[in-house]
Image (cartoon, rainbow, N blue to C red):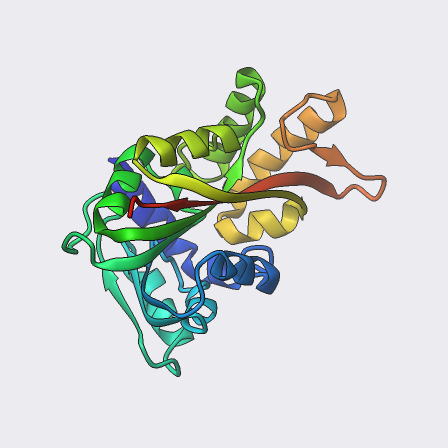
Length: 254
């Protein structure tokens, strides 16, 4: 199975649970991403758009929103979510090699996408190609610990949960990726948010896999192992951890 097949397999199966996950569709997060773009933006591409969670907020700030994703099941949910919105459309395609001409979009957004691609530098090079001069890209993603060993454990746990996960890097690494693509970082923001294991597990919709991972995580929590996500077992038995989020905005040369 190649990586694209992994993405299709995982997100075809978890499309509905991913779309419904409160932590991923939180209004304050979607609006934070949309607000990173200039108001009255012309054409916005929601790249690797998934089930279209961002599209309604983007539609409030732009004249045209197009979502592109590899997974047909996710696109079907995106169309259902936005059926009432004029100026919003979706297409199937790859983030690394989009079907669009140079300078096709005034802005691009990437929401929780880069940690599912094998070559994020190729995605950002493609973003740079399709942006108009002085256009911008808003990238929202999870970040990992600065210590490589701790980050490696965190990413390994993520891959056990979802084999389509590749790697979360640090905020500094994300900025470097943007700059290497010729995009100047103009703003950034980091924050943390707690997640409960059972909510996180339901998204995957594979109880056998998540039961095994729960056993591993409980053992790590009880041993006090630093997983880079503040993994902990509360007195009531609930497993919790804390995700670090980062939003970075890059601007193409004028």
